[in-house]
Length: 146
Length: 146
Image (cartoon, rainbow over all chains, first blue to last red):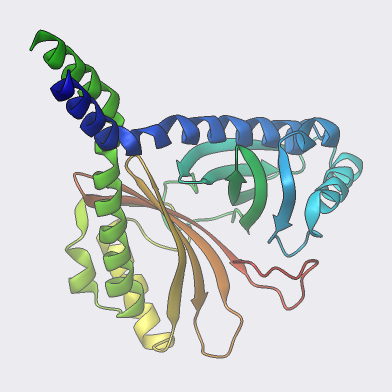
């Protein structure tokens, strides 16, 4: 039984990094649900359930905190009610979730390529960075931005 | 001994996702070395050792393949020899490595916020996407873009 306990303990230690996997998958689901509720459904109340005790904002056009996000959602609903963001790729590492997104404010326009980076603590969103680039009409390669 | 074998096998299965960790760490090192050699040292020959059998380019301003990357490096060396890119954050998930970068082409200018996404196969870089945004003079929050 002692050998069994030793092997089991060693295995638990070896497996430790594996426990990160389910957390990253849960974080991905949280961020996707937040994005869909906030950016696409433009429902701040629904989106705000995913916020932690803070929401530190690095997008230079948005005010800090959940209130700044609310103002952005209000702006989208008023000015671009048909705007839609399609999540092309989702990545997670540690406490971070990264989205590669095609955001179109008015149907039929080329829209923006965006990468959003979210930090989570205890499964809740607490910080956000992004980089936004308009998709140009012409490109030097045939591969598209996604 | 049979119980020992069962526990050991179960533990190995539980630990399986942990084996992904070292690959992601190796991929991060490869991409950082590639970035430093190519974008900062502007040494195409040194950077090209990290390419796989293809380099599919999604940056709309760059031609496809290693040759397109070479032309970009030549452009940087000629027009912006003092350009420097500081990697602020590095993430990895599956076969992908994501960099959050502050790129300054001329010292003293604000520069660009960039997210680069690299796909690797067998430890070599085979595909690249990015999103680039000039850092504005003023921001709606005090947190900076990084």
